[in-house]
Image (cartoon, rainbow, N blue to C red):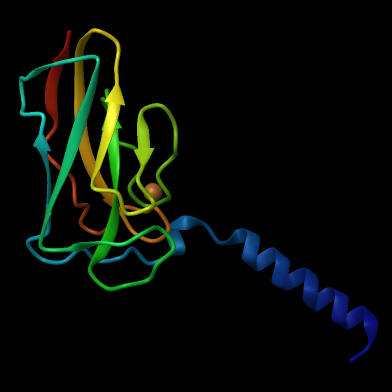
Length: 144
Ligand SMILES: [Cu+2]
């Protein structure tokens, strides 16, 4: 193969890779009947400024991010999130969306006094929500 053709082909490959978007990545199917929920605190609870949140999961398993294993995912805790992030791409990581990519099933959280909402959302090895998403009920707590 001559050099010019080779670099042309390399350019074409790069172009097609960059044209790919997360929309083209197949979503990981969620197991039927999979359910994520917050074990504690309970909805409506009043909690100390630093408190433990326990994650509950039925019908699927927990695996660290990056690990490919059927019917698993890792937890994301959504704090005071009013509109859900896009489901077809990796979840952002910020003060409102906390990743538990190590496979953790609980955390200690410190929040400002007042009302806060908490919700859990599973993500696959790429931090992308499953299809359909495995999303908990949103709970409200009051921090002392
Ligand atoms: Cu994640």
